[in-house]
Image 1 (tube, one colour):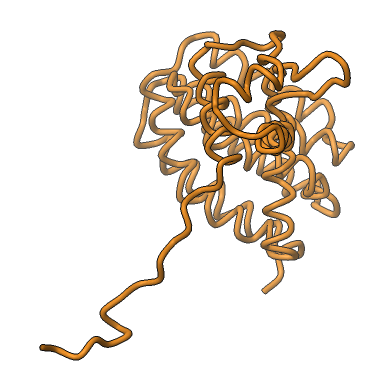
Image 2 (cartoon, one colour):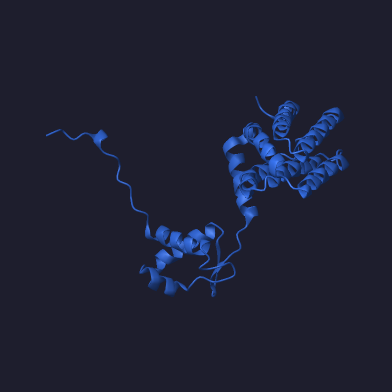
Length: 243
């Protein structure tokens, strides 16, 4: 008989605690529309009866849902189901990036964008609508209007890129990019501070080329122009990005 060795086994994992199981089922019922925002969950007594657990387990499960922003526990009334807040989720993402990346947040963000956004521009060129071109032009016009205000210039620059993701016609692209754009607008409004008028003019011209490629449904040019745009932009922002 072979001798038993430690490497023949893996650690035994504890099963999920009861409160986690209750919270998951309640969350699933909310996601499926069994309970909708504005409704109250069943009372604690009813939940105890439904799940056959103690009141303490139910209270802990409700606190978990409250921490996720799914419900608000109102004294004397119960657990109110909240409208999902995209802002709170985006703020959490921005805080996480800032915490994990520290001074390198902008550097890592730009590295990710240069891989993703040229492809998004190519897809936008294929599926864009006329109204998308109008909105892109409006973003560029606003950039030019506020070229002396670094914060507003940065804001409309991000809005320009956000609109390109929307122009793809596939909401997944916007969902993927929105947290990144939010991070930039919260933590890096200083992108254009100290940038020369000549460099800003170059940025405007690059945006015009991107709009033109998307308008003409030229996916290849949209891809290449966006790639070049990031190459130039990263050089311009070099002073903000640690080596």
